[in-house]
Amino acid sequence: MTAHYIVEEPATITIGSDLLGCVSMPQRHTAENMSTKMKTVLDEYDLGQRVAVIVTDNAHNMTAALRVGGWRFWGCFAHSLNLIVQAGVKEIEETGRNVRAIVTFFRRSAHASAQLKATQERMGLSMLKLKIDVPTRWNSTMLMLQRFVTTKMAIISTMAIINVGHASPNLENITNTEWIVIEQIIELLEIFDIITQVISSEKKFTASTVILFHKQICRHLTQSLARPDLMPATGQVARKMQTECESRFELLEDSEMVAQSTILDPRFKKLGFIRETKYSKAIEALVRMVSRIDLDTNLI
Image (cartoon, rainbow, N blue to C red; front, side, top):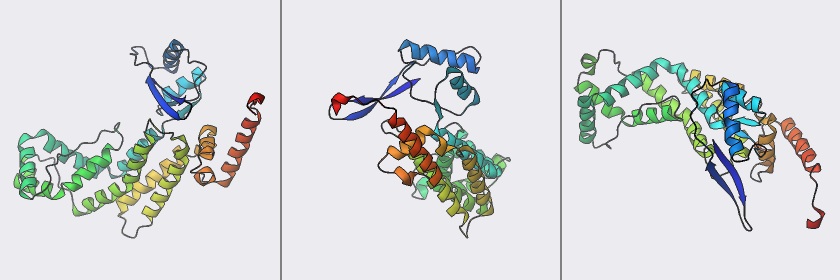
């Protein structure tokens, strides 16, 4: 568990972060057990009553544990984006499988890897190694595809030189159509990569940005689907990600914490909202909250 907090100094306000604990949990990861473990860590630092919100992944047992503990929580936005991307790329599962098979072949075969390097050198290209994606590592799918496309000519040439079909019969060459789809998928995923990097910052306030980022993603997917040159397979990926966005972020503007953070951010305020009604509701809630604050008359 990591604590993030605000440090108020006479002239500045900064964000601080400290690791509270990294503990083993041999018992079953039930909601009750996990809640007890988190409470133990918080009580050790006397933070039990000072938690504003707990940010966690979207695993059911984790969210259930936070409900058991009575804490306000927020599902990690970056983790949700990764789940959306993973759901989308499953729509081109066969192409993805072929790419991973080729990448794995070059990474595991010393001979093939040496040949790829020699081909890159002969072509005057940068000496780049292929990357493999890991579902739990954010943006790794896009990074794998980017590197694959960057080394496209070297891969095609090397596969022909070493007669890869004979060396590894399970490998299939990427078709021209698949290359186009891969390039379009990279363009689809780039916005997810950029937003994930921004939202993952531990030195900036980011809660106020998530509604705006959601708007940008929705607009990006809609514009992508309107492209006349969009391949059918790419369209399937974009539509799947659209559906996932609508499902996962349907109640985004209903979150009191996120809505109020957006309003109070001078960069966004009303512009950060998608629906006028949600903005009005958030304003009313904020006014009620402020009206309950007892002001210290000595400061007036």
